[in-house]
Length: 248
Length: 218
Image 1 (cartoon, rainbow over the protein chains, first blue to last red):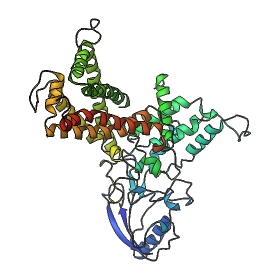
Image 2: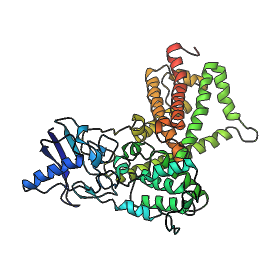
Image 3: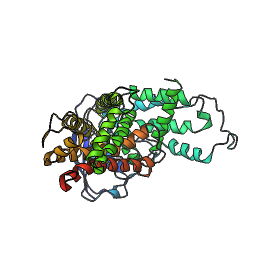
Image 4: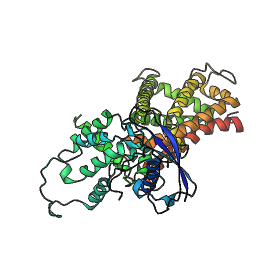
């Protein structure tokens, strides 16, 4: 298939940036979206141009490194990561717009690469347990209700890619933050720090300049891991509880 | 945002109930309006309870507006300084599942605020009186809705309120932690929001339409 891609090109953080149009020919429909960009980059390199910078690592859909906004939708038309999105999801002759995540807290480094270290700082503000755990415990040593285990696991599948922020009309990272709050808050090991965790992480989230949640649900629709929307309500419940106990 | 909004929803339901008294006839409507002023007397002075409600409501409106403007400013900055339209592409401008109700919350709120100013000047103080001034509560109502333009203004405003509540009621309950569904459409509170939005829009529009089209109350 032959396609046209319009890609956001930006030399560095200070450059203004613009959309640039490229034609890519003989694209296999079995290629992943990133492989298509690889082909385009070889083309650009041969022509002596600067290749397009984009983040990627495992290309298995589990690391959270890749992610671009394709035709206005984070990770493109399928519910998966950009590396697991295949060119068969597009029509032959399609014009595809490729842009970086856009958020005040995610400054563009170059082309499609954004700085997502704000997520690391939110995790550092409480997204962990500090109990020394040693090696993995016996599976039945601490009983966990099945529902809680399932919900915690669903939330734990967050790979921190940032699609929720890119999709949110308010540039909020509530889904990311609430996934970790829910994951740890539903398990026995997460209880001692449950209240300080939600306060710390929400404070850091706001401090980083992410927006507020207006419960639109665009985040959960764009999420490649399908983090459910009720994690945000769980965060709000924990936050209200912590505030009621005077833990601000 | 959530708590002040819910206070206003509670008020709207009470207000709508009072309006529906119009169907019980002018006397019943006027008597209800009179009773609102004498409720809890002599414990409270005349109109005492009414003024308590007005102060609480005004506080709710101001808090709602203040927090909305703050969040509006903050979210615009957070989304990359140009709000939701921050992407260059012309495709999928409304995202994957965003509803009309959700992206008219802010300007819809402004529309409703302007309407409330008109509404108070029209039916509370009766300074604006198309169709002629009147002495009784029912008279004010009846005269105003002889005008097509008044009917149109109220219709537009009530539809705006309906959209605002469709998203707002759901959003308020979620902010208070009351959603237990992975997807919004499966949530009880999403269904409840649709029901409340429809109830309030239809409940408020029924008396004006009955007056204009069917000559309710002569």
